[in-house]
Image (cartoon, rainbow, N blue to C red; front, side, top):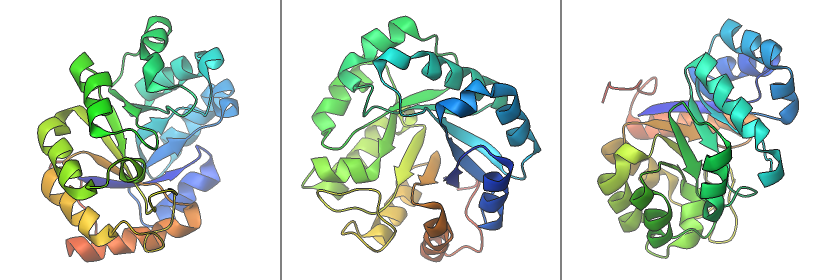
Length: 229
């Protein structure tokens, strides 16, 4: 698996991600970053870090032009598109797909409470891909680890990106070690069962510590690049 950080697409933030020890990142976008497309592309191309994936801004169904622009940015950066689904519900994907021309590798992110049954029927049975937020999935399933392993084993080829942070059964987005998710066990499972992009989706000042936890669990001085497992 390829373990990456997360940051906005500015020169300073991209440099900070490199200094935290990452070789690659997922971009966290605002609409303003896409309105200034050429500036954003230039900052990313000049950065020391690779752009592995790009997360759409938190826009709703009335602002799908920003999903299209995120797709276009991914094409220019050779990155994977992450379609955020809190304001663009997975139940509305037909509406989205009729209006956005998605031309790059992509996945749709699960929200809190989305069960295995829901994800299989809404995404995998329709030939669509999932960006798996493990903390969101943790809120949905009491038997989290066996169901996560089954999801990765059966549908790993349709999960291009995984978001990884700590959480509880009611709260997500926590720093490693501050929730109840057994992060070391989660990392070991991902290492055993998954070969895609794993984004350490915690706050910027918590990402270096999260990367240390990953490297300790994997027993490596640096995390693996794609295909090295």
